[in-house]
Length: 166
Image 1 (cartoon, rainbow, N blue to C red):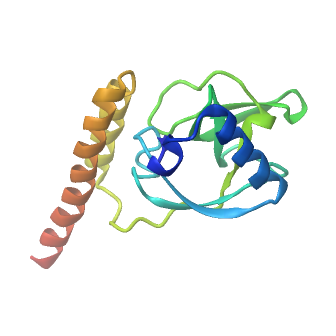
Image 2 (image 1 turned 180 degrees about the vertical axis):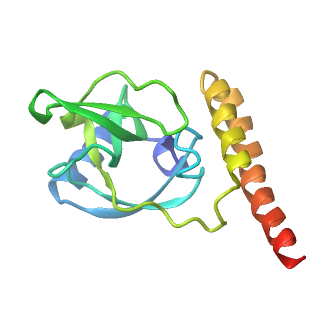
């Protein structure tokens, strides 16, 4: 997942400076990210709580990290070399990211987010993952996919409500 517009204007130097300050102060901040790489677990724009601390990272944790002067949110799938290196992967991606140094991690998402919408049906979630995988190569197509997936997320919830009333 890519960052929400609030961090998009920061260049790499400023983004790293903010990340270092937040880690040093062990801040907890409310954040939202765009992108579809963490579907169906985290919807684009969903509010999350980020604890800026890297002390107790475990496999399965969802973390925020910097790579190539950009902010990402992915899940830890492996911790290697005494904890100095991590493998991460977006839930919608079949293949892990390149190895990541622990000092690139900003912090950990505290809990699975509570969606403002009910979780999508299994079919909607499968479609969302497929779209995310196919469109993750192009930023332009990813922005279109984000709009479509938001509609799909809400539409599946509306469909469930209609079926429940019958």
